[in-house]
Image (cartoon, rainbow, N blue to C red; front, top):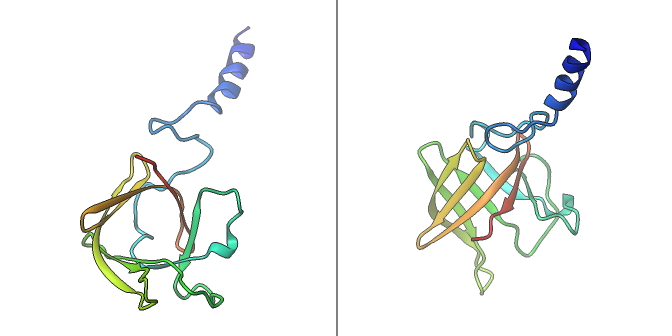
Length: 135
């Protein structure tokens, strides 16, 4: 009977959720150590129905030509720059701030009077995968 109880506990334990709501088998980013670099939207890698946006480091590959490709630069001091989509195609970087909540794996990008919130679903040195959080 004790063996059966132990087996049930081991199997059931694999389905438990961690304190932040993430599965124990799918690691969530806990620190933004890889975040502080220049990220370029790699929309060619995304699935059409996927809500996540995939970003790669600027030097990861040669990105195909595009009229506009979103980019972010995150600095360790909490400053950031984001690529502004200009109506006259004179795209340029604008300054902002960023915050990362490691418990919830959320990233906030503050663009003057607008704050955008994202769930970070993957963060490695070569990939930033984020999904918008609707207010």
